[in-house]
Image (cartoon, rainbow, N blue to C red; front, side):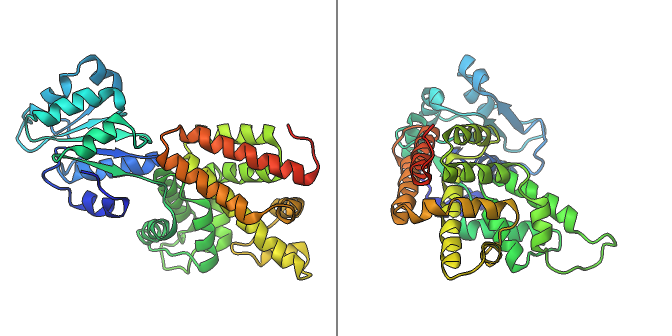
Length: 351
């Protein structure tokens, strides 16, 4: 079964009992892991129960293909349905998964955790075509879904963000669900009242002081490097973002937000506003070094077809999701192309 992205959350909350295998895949590794955990909890109350939950690694399954069926058929000490988790799952396991689906044994729930799988992936196609299996895509949080995660996590600590802080969190989170929750937990600890009493909303100053010291700052640096036309810096920042687990789609969206911020800033300065005043009027506002970046890159905005630039980013995101080519390569080529446009606009030599 192929589960549409809009229905994945409902499926995880109440898994279809006909699905003996559930493939959870996508560029958001944190969300993949979180949903795999939720599926396991739907079957086993204690996620650390060694008798009812078993983990199988890539090499372990490759070296012993019969292990999947053996573990699915095993009976738990003390009774109860078991969960078999395979991570990372990949196309090399397709034959094993297909053989099991054609001749299932036992009643265990098998959860496969995988990275991004293109539409042509043999594992994804096999699971989507089976009536007794389900494939759940996991894309980076954005829009209302990201807002729900932010509100829910803060509410668990008796907190909420004010409007400016909420906008800041929306701009600086969302590349990876696990990282998003970790950052929000850190913010909740930072903003919690010392005496344990009630407090007002989380402010922009508190959010800015606490959020984004890892992936968000890397994305900011990468976006600034693209706008400066510095391809050497772009490559270095892009490698760092990937090493930190940031999905290529999250990189493209961060750059689109940077371009939109530049557009808004340029529109403000065109009315005669001083750069610092124009930057402070943005939502979320920009301060300090960020104002210098906006001023420096205004020429990039003035000298290019902005709708075309944003269209290139949209096109790259679609290609990442649909063409089957490596999303890291598609994103990297797009960053290099836009950095070249910026370099031409500023008159600096292309590197």
